[in-house]
Image (cartoon, rainbow, N blue to C red; front, side, top):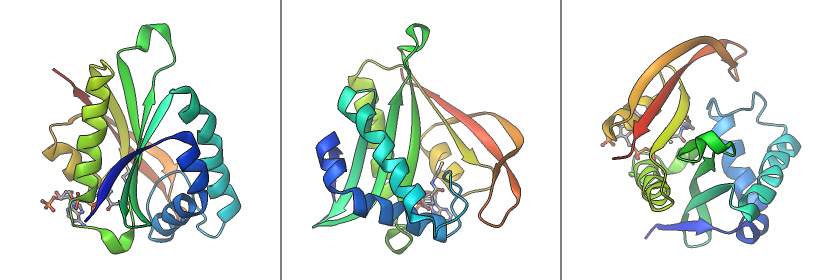
Length: 172
Ligand SMILES: CC(C)(COP(=O)(O)OP(=O)(O)OC[C@H]1O[C@@H](n2cnc3c(N)ncnc32)[C@H](O)[C@@H]1OP(=O)(O)O)[C@@H](O)C(=O)NCCC(=O)NCCS
């Protein structure tokens, strides 16, 4: 059975190595999730470490998919800090371990994030995803809309500048 848990900052701190391992595995598999070198474990760990204050402050939230003690997936909700964006949140770090894919884990994580954002009173979600990736099909199947595309947006693990697709979902 897979559990979907809203992690506290202290849970994230305790699971720092597992979270880093998941992100590292996704980068090693070629994912476009901010990093170009899967071997740079320190940079990946630093990324998660930097998220802790925001989780503690409630500026962001982290859902984790766990099977027993193993972390299989994550998604983050990042709430807009600006007064004119209080209705809005950005989805990021939707990650599923390469060995745990096509079981509906990402779909369930996205549903958890959306449900949580709604409960927080948010009415607009945004994200960006590498153009051509399978994630876009997932988002489209969850009624996300394509806003547009930016070319040459992010460097891939193969050293190519990939386009990104901006997407949004109005929560009604
Ligand atoms: C994208 C990702 C999160 C999907 O995780 P997952 O748990 O395998 O996805 P799900 O099993 O919930 O699949 C949901 C839907 O996504 C689409 N999808 C997911 N993987 C797919 C694949 N390899 N090929 C085609 N469609 C795929 C399908 O529409 C699928 O629905 P279906 O199984 O009913 O056909 C995962 O591949 C991943 O972690 N990739 C690397 C990180 C990344 O790119 N994250 C997104 C950043 S924006």
